[in-house]
Image (tube, rainbow, N blue to C red; front, side):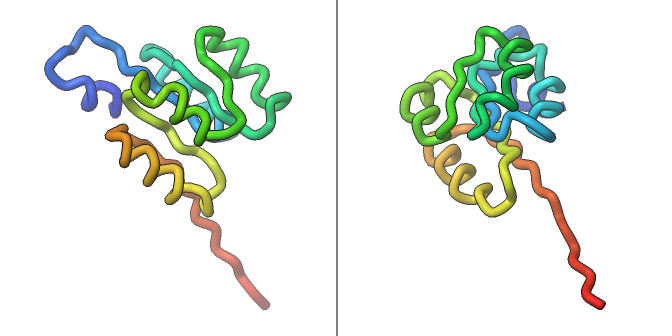
Length: 114
C-alpha cells in the first residue's frame, strides 16, 4: 500500500520510516511496514515498547518526538503517527514542515449520555 506509492520511480529502494506512538496501533502499523527500513521508534513508555525494540534492533528509540526530528529528521522519509488524537496535529505539522510523508492514526470515539 502506502510504501509502494511513496517509493515512486526507484522501485528497489526502501523507505526510512519512524513510528511515533510505537505501541498499540503503532505497533501493528510498524509491523505492516516491516519490509521497509524502520529507523526510529518513539514512545513515552520505554518499558511497554521493549518488544518492538527487540523486533527492530536497528531502530533508534526516542521518548520525545521533537528530539527524534532534531536528530534524525534528514534520515526519515515517512512518519507513522499513532499517538493519542489530541497530539496528532502538532506532530503531523512538524513532520510536514520537514517534508515528510505521514500516515496518521485517528480513533473516533463517540460518547453516549443518558
